[in-house]
Length: 445
Ligand SMILES: [Zn+2]
Figure 1 (cartoon, rainbow, N blue to C red):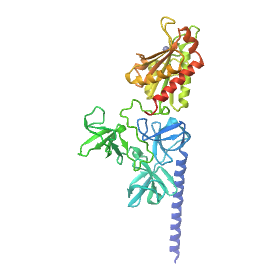
Figure 2 (figure 1 turned 180 degrees about the vertical axis):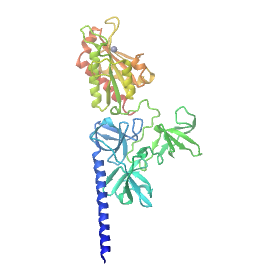
Figure 3 (figure 1 turned 90 degrees about the vertical axis):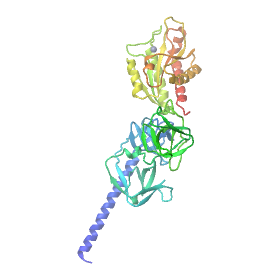
Figure 4 (figure 1 turned 135 degrees about the vertical axis):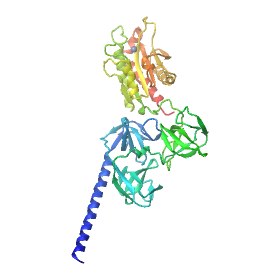
């Protein structure tokens, strides 16, 4: 054994040691990163959806206080990993954020000819499929000798001995946008296959029994598929079911055709509450001198409180005595893409004491259900006459593209009404009735 051989051997061991050290450091960093990005569920029940938005179908649900690992963020939605290892999306306003910051651009490149992708981070767990040499995947999470990746739209695990970890600039578009391996089931409920991705396009055929298809492209929540005869057509994403290799706890997907609104729990809904009048505009003024603008705000704040406690995303068009133009009030609903806009008013008529009680107004036919639900609870619980549901051509309704209603909650030139409406008891009852109505309206049908 000569000197130079010894020297060579030593330097090689040293080199290997450095590599091992660096690799260990890197992995520790990934684990730390993954552990830090956690959020806590605030709503009593929270829907985890397949994509970042209420239009995506529900994957599963989690409960209050559950903690979720955040993997990414898009349009105020967090991409999360569940304990069940499923991946989904939650509305960021329904979870408590503990300093989420993601800058994880680590990729794994497969280094063996064919590598099993497993359901869990154990050798004996189910094989979900295989990946080939040189395929690359964003690394979502790291646990002991395993790395977690997204595989066929669900999370899966690869043994870290079979991949190289590489750092790569963000190309995260592919992370979920990729549909190349997405398979869907179509026809479980009759599904029209159309020439173009819109509901008014020509129908090529109607599928009435469930068939599986590979998704060719995705466009505005429509999937392009190829039919048995070779023709290609589009099917609306919301009437299809995503096929996971094993349909773990993915709930039966709701197969309603065209939902009138997307939020399926109050906790997911964005609700704009609009206290009428304000600032130099007092609205109606009661004989004993309280103004409509004061009690609309009081009532609105009580309602907002109830809705927030239920986890809803609540936006008030005003929360103090300010003048807000009607245009701005409508704009708030547009900007927030509100699931409901509730305008609160108290009434007056030309001739005192000729009218009494509450009235619920809507403008468009598709807002009638919301109006009727709210009015049902008002009629049931509120101790004033109920004048029912009516069509009303109010600016905040007619100019509003979001589902909107306007409540007149009593007459300020009715001697009886004014003894009732300016009380905490009355306003609490109104707020509770509207809250219960919205809870029912936004429940899964
Ligand atoms: Zn008014």
